[in-house]
Length: 412
Image (cartoon, rainbow, N blue to C red):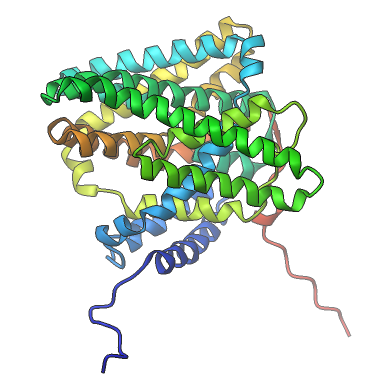
């Protein structure tokens, strides 16, 4: 009976991808019954119900085996976020850099001392504070697309989220030598490990960015292939980063930044991903909901709540006050800060890296960060939606999300 499948049945990444999309689409549809509720909330709720915490249709092992789906989704999202950060514009408009530095410094200090008050000291508190500087590009991009938001607040928020993630990675890299030293690693690892991660990921992303730009120039008359070029470049970058043990989060972000910064005419930086891009958002957030660690959330709830409230307040006040002092209207400054509150992809990646490399420090860091991410990913989408409605930006909701009323039956 060798033709029969082995029991118990095992899933694979393709099966799980289909499961994520099917369930997530239903969850997203249900949330659209309530216009004030973003579809991300529905995606995560379906994941939570189907995941190990409730029905147990998928377990943590299956989630881990399907991690490649999330890596591709995050890679495309971070690439797209990188496209919102043009180095040429930053040189001309340095106010964004000032705002980002003020807000990131305030966030780091508030979270560091908040963790210290909760009994998380030293390097663990510093790593959590560095991770807290990051913001979620996926929530901002998805909610903005869903609401059709365009304007100064949306664009400035995207640039600040990109800068936040760059700064978070730089601060984390600066802390790595101290973590290696604390783990009694050899001097070559203490100095070489962080430099290899930072410089290697930067060089990989920049090289692929230039290669993508050159390919787009050569094929500029064949626009139908540009999307394939982009997806191929991102996938190649992710694969190379995995092989070379570089950051699968920072490299695609650099890829997007380089593409935007070196283009003189719009070839590929403003390419429309279309409705297919929604598939990756659905998969990412259903996965995030299924992967919530409820036990850790309960165990580290006090520290996580301090992280959530301290970080959120620092982001909001840091951006709101500094942007207003730089000449931004009060409403725009305040709502921009609210859009930086969600935290997810890079935070999870850096927490996982810490846990993999440094078991002792990583256990505390990962538990607190994952518990905080669970809260921020739950409250973040509704906050982002409210902020965009208050911002004064133009809103043109995607008609694909709206229900089409049935046509009246003609009378005989």
